[in-house]
Image (cartoon, one colour):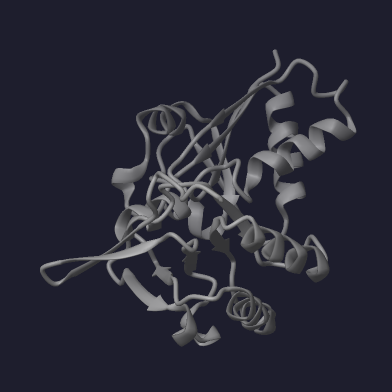
Length: 252
């Protein structure tokens, strides 16, 4: 009998963000596969085998899950946030596409989770209240020229923009280039949100005017949201909120 592969998002770090459906999947899984920090969030139990793997082995992880399911196992692949947003769901289908006949009878289910982007936006207010886009600044799987073009087009369309993976030790220059593009193309001082370790004990939410931003304000634990030209800062007692109005000025 063929088994199942479930790909689930654990949401941000706080366990309270894990959905009931994902909790059910954890409770029924015979095997849980994922990146080491995500496996650490799973409580071990009898009848469950945990398979922790290193970073950048997404395809191998997906292949392993399918092979276990082929033997009749109920396999759960875990990601942080949502599994369909720069995570394991796409990697799984990449493997399935290469040999779809072999995996024909395996049941696949994708369970959504709360993304880092949505968690960060909620902490800051409603910066994604109007049209927005999401761009991954890592150039590990795509050339920088494509990233640069997408940032420029997003600015031309006046989207609010959420940036994943802004800056790492191996990629220190990309976010600095991005900030240069933003400052050269935006004729305003729109708010920029630096949300680091959202829902962790050391969470920090910093709202900085665009012209005062620097690259060292972000790292791989930071989700950056850049407002559109319409995004506004609202002061409530000692609290700063960012929101983007639902309406947009009519063009002449």
